[in-house]
Image (cartoon, rainbow, N blue to C red; front, side, top):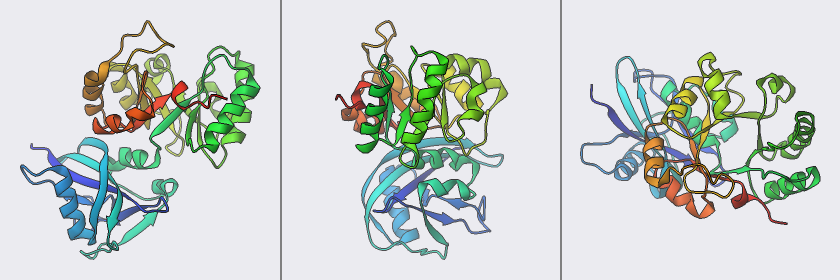
Length: 314
């Protein structure tokens, strides 16, 4: 069966809301909501197909777009490759040129709409930022919280509280403060035993690769309303992350780092191959900075994660 190549768009308005369309009842997966787009013709460039489809479907002319995520999905009756681009600028006023209902939805409202199963990773990618801050090790609690506060004030929207040298009670105390700091401003990801999950309902959870190996076969430990992420370093761990139903992963180390000098870097080419075979948003980690964002996007990654790269120095 030939995989149907579809170009789809996450169209973001100036207010950050995203445009979605409802499929006609007569279509495949009819009645569900989707990200606008359509089939890529043989020999056609994806961005050309996307521009053509959005002109036909919505009456808009795309002026700025970039790759967001690729998702391969097998339905019982067809196989699709969704080639998703983020459209950040366009001319014209979108309207349902084919009679389809449209809705402008904030990223946090997206999970309230019914999408085809293949669209779930796109919902995650559309809701996540392109930078993921991981807190540095070895800081005293006041400095750690001060730095987090500063980073959030500067626009960081996704923060992992990583403090491997803290004792459990100490980490839990800091986590309580971090939850308060992030409330309504950024998504906090905590690390630790899954037994703690119930104590921090507002936080997402970032699993270590060891936890992934231990728990993947049991599936997702909590409902989709909460973010679940994992640290991956190779194809085997990415497969476990897929099995567990995580929302996104970090893939590391892309390049050599001072924090893990013993870890063998993947390099950009291998990272690119791993991202290409994985159906969820991927943050590249290890020796990368905000300057590598475009390169990360070009290989299909969500963006970049970092410790020093995004940590306010003072």
